[in-house]
Length: 171
Image 1 (cartoon, rainbow, N blue to C red):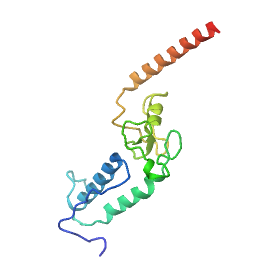
Image 2: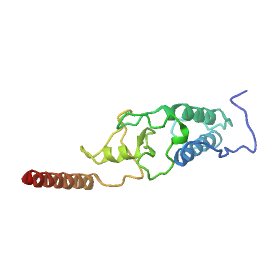
Image 3: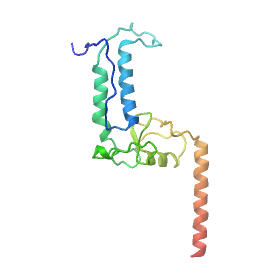
């Protein structure tokens, strides 16, 4: 009975939350997509798959939201291994350009923004993988090619060596 609960005019409403806008959009969007998949057939049917039967239910969407609310605030940054979310939710950084903003990569794991960029800017370049799940890291804020990232890193290293040589010369 619980699994087949259905309401004709149901929609997941946006509610006030202390999650950052990016996390709020993700959770609400995913919950809506899960609900849609319960009632609409897939666009491409897989071979040998039984015929689609709609199963209107809030259960899967609610389970997803509960999992997010329980799991996400306790996750650590994949680079520095410190908690991503502050103990006091009022201290959560909502400015998406702040170094302390929390970034969610494609696989779903979290980084502080400054840690994410530090991780992506250091060798080895090419096919950076999440330390938790091993999936390749994708994120819309990182669009540099591996070659360009490596060239920039090499240039930065050469510049630091030159500055160190000048410092050593005057000392």
